[in-house]
Length: 348
Ligand code: GDP
Ligand code: ZN
Image (cartoon, rainbow, N blue to C red):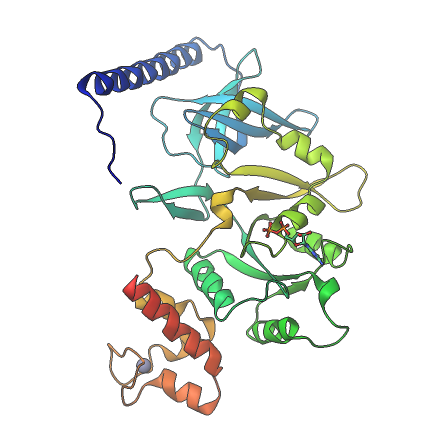
């Protein structure tokens, strides 16, 4: 496949368009700065980035009555790299738009490689990653471990959701048995069904007061669960404006959705979901052997106990990890999973 070369004239046109765009953004930033200095904006207020479109943001805030409002905001010229979920300080203009003047500290950040394999933040201040699995499609081999290792390395707490509980037998079942192993490791496991309204209360409780993302293999029911959790009202608040819907960033931008508490008429906001196709594809990016091993939480007590400092836990004498597997302190399937992930990442 040959990539079409741009003619000089085409290249010149592209550059011209880009320069004009940058110029417009700069002019707007200057106007905003001038307006700020002239006192044309309201007082500084806290807010949170709900979506991001190029140099313009949607900021969610609370008005004087405590109701959630959304404001189209521009950035100050010196503010770059804001992502959905960022906490910001902003000032409102007379027309309800605003200017973001500062970014708060991030408690966590989710990253993904961009088209040039550079890691880029896609969302910030996430409290938990809900890894959704189902009996159908059955979680293959070490899929759950891959998600867990990736989550453990972001420092964001993973939670396992076994969806499609309506397809499970009353007792037992392969998927349930598999997940009980993770519960034994200390992970929270929630059984739910988007179809028959089972376990959604437990799910709401888990989501309460936290910012969450859903990840998992295609077909496990992420969309179905999210549809259940976000009533129409919330979806409307989160709906893209006409302008941004036509924009080309809409397919990849992550969005923040406020979650009302289950069953409460006043829809008290108790948590948020951040969702985008990119976030759902969350995976193992650029981890080294040590990080992979540490992603298996039950390995941690053994990792410093091997006889050799640079033990790779393959066949070394005095390997504390191999010994733990031998003694039954580590499940052989988790150890096999570790080896597979390590070898895949090394060869990939
Ligand atoms: P996603 O790819 O993870 O977003 O999965 P979807 O939400 O698109 O669901 C995939 C398929 O599973 C659809 O046909 C859903 O109707 C079905 N599905 C989702 N949740 C459940 C559930 O709890 N029980 C059953 N039986 N099917 C479900
Ligand atoms: Zn070892």
